[in-house]
Image (tube, rainbow, N blue to C red; front, side, top):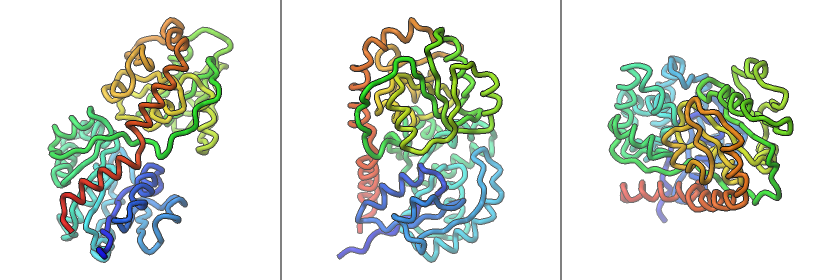
Amino acid sequence: MTSPIRYALIGDAESPHLLKWARALAALPELELWVASSRGFLSGFDTIVPPARRLALATRPDAGGGNIGLLKQLPRLARWLHRVHPEWLHAHYLTSHGTLAWLAQRLYGVRGRLVGSAWGSDILVAPQKSTALRALTRRVLRACVLTTSDSQAMAEKMRALGAFDIMVFPFGLEAMPPAPAAKDPALFFANRGLEPIYAPERVLQAFAALPGDELRLVVANDGSLRAELQAMADERTAFVGRLDADTQAGWYARALWYLSLPTSDSVSVSVLEAMAHGCIPVVSDLPANRELVRDGDNGIVLAAGERLTPERLAPLAARAGAIAAANRAWVEREALFAPRVRAFVDRLLAMEPR
């Protein structure tokens, strides 16, 4: 019997996104999963990766850069990887964890083949901040034998930076939610982070332009802009903070409209979740959003500076049931995560004969 392949994830294991990757990978019998985290571990890892196969570096990395504390942990990570002796290293968020994995190989001779997953701002934002970050991202991409992107638009950016083999698939859902029982046509829901990168003020402005005392906007999640946003919101808007999965699913299920208007983004799992719950998405005019939303057909693509009006909403509201069914069918066909991860690992196995 062939021994399982040692597979090391390197990322932030306090992120539910890395946990989702870990669950999908741990379900594959060919792999023995190991995880190195720049911070700690969510409790969900306890049931899928034993403590003996985990390393917590206990840093506080900054997605915007300046991660000196993380780089100081490079010798410790390299020692751990030498003990693990993985056949594959899989870095998530290329600017930080990808750099760490690449340096472990380059400076400390860590073995194994490197793959990387881009998460969004590591490709769409960080390389534009400085020449150094752009050069670093380029080096990491060129060191990866395979990379993943959640949109064609981001994949094109990665190719321009030097990536040569990219698999494109949405960072999708682990399971389809049940079809919603009923939708509230007056209810709008938003749940992106309350941070500048997600431009939550655009959500408030778009909603505020709509007339009607019966309309309601529920804003979930938290962030550094919350107090400022609460001060500018009208009385029809409620801020409910961070939600557990069940509570959030309840809001998705009730709301007819879902708002996500960042100025930069790749394919958002939150938009996919909203579509799976039968919401009609209202999104900003970005290439990745146009891969999901056809303006005036299955949602609204709101141009920069454009006002959201009842005239834009009404034709979609009249077809809400059909739109919900079509969006749910697309998500089930194209954006369930486990089959995509299975195909990704099959690509890796085809690269390296056992």
